[in-house]
Image (cartoon, rainbow, N blue to C red; front, side):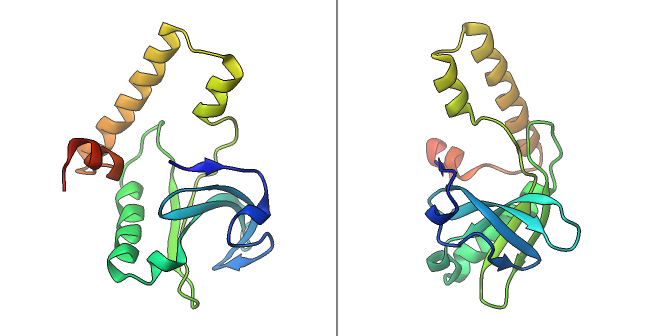
Length: 154
């Protein structure tokens, strides 16, 4: 699960740091494998979410390959409930990154906190949207890592 904080100093990379052709703007969140930042592509000025593989994992070839495979797999699927992948790379310093669509707005967690609780119709709508996105990735032979853990699939 990714935690979210709106403070550039919370992540291991500081605001203003260049990663490939991207400049870090602010910290978005951190999960078990990677940290996500808002960044701007220096060449075209486009804002992106830049996912950076944790440095300790980047030094493990199997984990680095898993990260690159994630970008390849995700870029093959187009669906309104999935983000778009724009770029993937490795810097000369050994930093692996994935540049993806930056979504503005509340996370589902924050949305629920702001509402108190969701009604049945809203829960059903969110469930349908999630199931539709999962079906799209499954049609492409992709199973999310957290689903594999739930299903005990290798």
